[in-house]
View 1 (cartoon, each protein chain N blue to C red):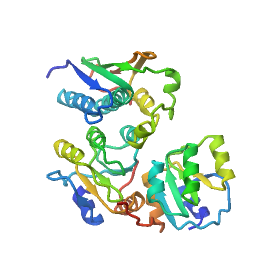
View 2: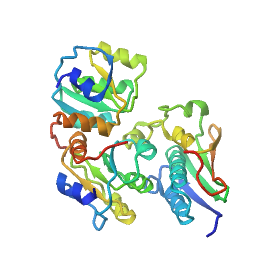
View 3: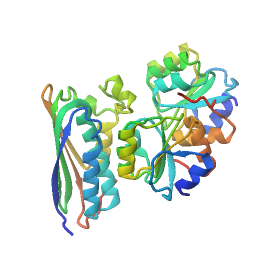
View 4: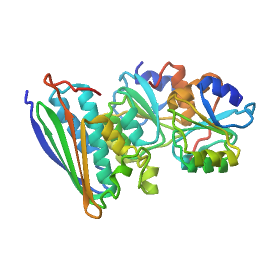
Length: 117
Length: 149
Length: 113
């Protein structure tokens, strides 16, 4: 689905704009960035509650397509600027992580079923 | 049913195997006293966060609890690094937790704010390099109910 | 909805022995940060997490959660399992990542208020 559709599904706000027609096929939710690096899928939407700069750098390294922050949590201006420099779109939704994942799954988004060791 | 209770727990720094047992035991005491569930929830959250702070940051600590018909009072005194800046520590998201603590899912900087949200009075005093004393009160109104959430 | 129904619907592996799978599940919570769960999870919620250390049992017990589902085939150590049995906290596991597990639970009607 496109970022545009995701924004509608989550009633999200976009913080760091990019091309809203970018297509995202997978999603991954995590609060521990080491988890994202071990298990995630590239070109996915990262769903997280953590709003520090480390999240942006991790998303960059892990090749995530965009980040959505849950529960209305917003990163600070410096972090938003960092995301803009790395061309990573940032969204904020007031939904909980559980409902965020639920709604996107309902509309067809999936995770790559990568299992760890 | 007895409306009064008091007790003490000893906490050992970095002893994660026992982390949560003090607040868990306090919860059982409050349940046995038949206190309202919202009061038990508030006291449990506050006690857990206070206990975790002592275990994560201090060398040792003592938690005393006192329950009367009017209130639940918990005092946690620890020996350890103390809190350098209490106002900063009360800020949501602020943490001094090292990486291994954060990997365990602690150190999100929500501990003290979680306590504050759930109690009616919170007092913290600290001497850097010596330790911290944290005290909180939850009022029980005349009917033994829990007051505002 | 009770835990056993989640186990059946998601083909979860129940790792603890002798824990009550007839507990009512009132919602779901996904988080790896302990204070987040302590501060926000609802009573009777099922908790989906990556964390496997002992303190997940303390948190689940304190908040009267229905049980814990571990993601990505994560397995708790013996200490955590022993404590879970003592405290009567059911621990289940799935090879799926959190997003997938939550999605399926949402499909079953669970929410996080």
